[in-house]
Amino acid sequence: MSALDFSTKIGSKRFSNPIFTASGCASSGQELAQFFPLTEIGAVVTKSIMVKARTGRATPRMAETPSGMLNSIGLQGPGIDTFLERDIPWLVEQQVKVIVSIAGESVDEYGVLARRLRAVAGISAVEVNISCPNVENRGQVFACHPDTSIAVIEAVRRNIGGELPIIAKLSPDVTDIVEIARAVINAGVDGLALINTLLGMVIDTNTMKPKLAGKTGGLSGPAIRPVAVRAIYQVHQAFPDTPIVGMGGVASGRDALELILAGASAVSVGTASFGNPKAAFDIKNQLAELLTEKGFNDLRDAIGFAHRGI
Amino acid sequence: MSAKINQFATQMLAEVISNKKVGPYHHMVFAVGDMASHVKPGNFVAISVGGEQSSLVLRRAFAIYRALDKGPMGGSIELVVAPHGQGSRWLCQRAVGDLVDFIGPLGTAFGIPTVNANAMLVGGGYGSAPLFALAELLKNKGCRVDMVLGASTANKIYAPLEGKRSVSSLTLTTDDGSTGIHGQISEAIPRLIREFGTEVIYSCGPMGMLAAVAKIAEEFNLVHQCAVEESMACGIGVCMTCVIPVKNEDGIKMIRSCIDGPVMDGSQVIWDRKTVMDAL
Image 1 (cartoon, chains in turn orange, purple):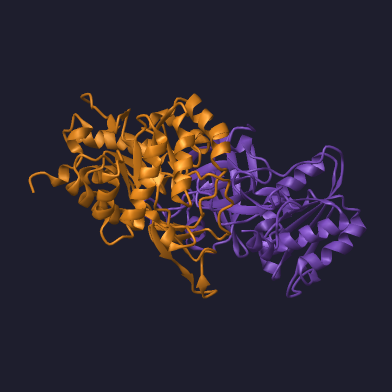
Image 2 (cartoon, each protein chain N blue to C red; image 1 turned 180 degrees about the vertical axis):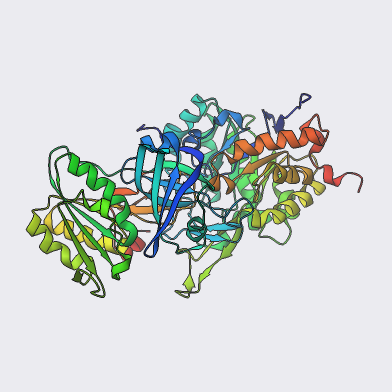
C-alpha cells in the first residue's frame, strides 16, 4: 500500500485522520476506550456541554426505527465545571484530540461557555451546537434562523479568542441550509458540522400514544444518510473552501467515503457506535483501504470529488 | 475516578452451542471463552441482532442466566430469552454453530452481604434468570436463600430444576392462580418476609414489580438490590437513553442503567413517575 496522506485540516488545526466521533455518541470518551485506543481516530467530539448540570428528559428516551433511531435525551450533562475538571483532563492525558461541543439556552450562555474554554489546554476545536432538536420550544433551535445563528457565532467568536477553530453544527430541518451556512460563515466560523438529527416521532400503536416521553426526538442512523449527503453536497458547492465535518448514518468506510465525495473534510461516526463500539476505528481502517483502492494518495483529493467535471 | 468504565467488557463472536425451547422462553448457551470468567450475577451482555444487512441498528441487552468458566466447550454464557420483539425473535432463531456478536460482561453485579444474612430473591417472569447464579453464590457463602417467583400464568415462571438446588425454599405465585399462590407476587412477599426472617431482598423483573418490592423493603427496613430494566441503545454507556431517576441532593439525578446498573439500590430509585415528571 502506497503511503496515504490521511490527515485533514479544520481552520488552523490538523488531525491525523478524518474519522471523528459524533457529539452525543461517545459520551466523554472513556466508555469507548475499552474497545479501541481513542488516539487511533482523528478526534473525539464530546457530548454537548452546557453551563449548568442538566437532568435531561424522562424515559422512554429512545425508539428504534427502520435503519435508525429516535433519541430524546435533552442534553443531559454534568455542566461545564465538572466537565472541565473531570472529563477533559482524562482525554488530554490520553493524548486524544478533543473537539468540545457546546450548547446554550441563550446567546449569552454560548459566550460564557466559549470564555470558559479559551484557557483550557489540549482542545483542538469547539463545535457550537445550535441545532439540538430536543428542546422544549422549536424557536430555541438557533440554527433554524440566520439571525440567531449569527448571534450565537458572534458571541462565541468574541469570547473564545486565540486560534481555536469554531465549527457550527447545523440542522437539516430548514428550508435552505445553504442560507444558514452562509450566515455562520460570514459570522466567522472555521468549519461546519453537517448534519444534526432530524426531528421525528413514533407513535406506539399498542398504547396509541407517542413512544417517547418527550414526544418528539432526533432521528439518526443510516435512514438519514441521504439527507446528510445532500446537505453536505449543497453546502460544499456553495462554499468549497469551508471545511465540513460530515455526519449522518455513517456505518462503514464506504459511507464515510460517500460523505467525503460530497464535500466533507472529516466524518463523524454516531449511531453506528451504539451497535458497534469499535465502529469509528473500523470505519477509519476501511476508509483508508478504500481511498487507496480508488487511487487516492491524499485524502484532500477525494474531498468534494463528486462535484468535479460536472 | 472510580473503576474504569466497562473494565471487563470485550467484544467477540460467540458461537451458539445450544438453543432449547423452555415453555415460552429459549434457553441458549454461547461459547465465549475468557469472557465467562469475568461474569458476576447481575451482569448482562449486549448482542447485535438481525445480521449484517439488518435494519435493526441497536444492540439488545440480555441478563446473564449463568456463566461457566470451564465447561466442556470452554467458557460459556447462558441466557433465557423471551422472543417478544424483532431482535429477541431473531436471536431465538439462531441455530447451533451460528455466530453472534457479543459484548460483555457489562453492568453492575448484585452485592453480596459481608456477613451471613437471610436473603429473599424475588423474580418476575424470565426476570428470575439471573437470580439462580446469585442464589448459588449466596448459598455457598452460607446465607439462607428463599426464592419467590411470580408470573401471569404457570408456564411463564422460569424455574429450572438445577436452579432449585441452591435455594432453601421456593414459593411460586401466579396472577391467574394456575400454580402456587393466586395473586400478584408483591401480595405474597410480606408474609414470607416474616416467616423467613428476611434481612436482604434481591429482585429482578418488570419495573412495576420492582417498585412494589421496593415499597415493601422500605416498610420492613430491608436492604433491597434490584436489577432494573429500561430500553438501551448501546449497553456500554454512550447513548444516555437507558437512564433511571435516582435521589440526589438536588432532588433527582438520571443514572445509566448500563453503567450504574442494572443492579441498583432499590431505596435510591425514584419509582413514582409523577415525582419524576414534577422534578424535570
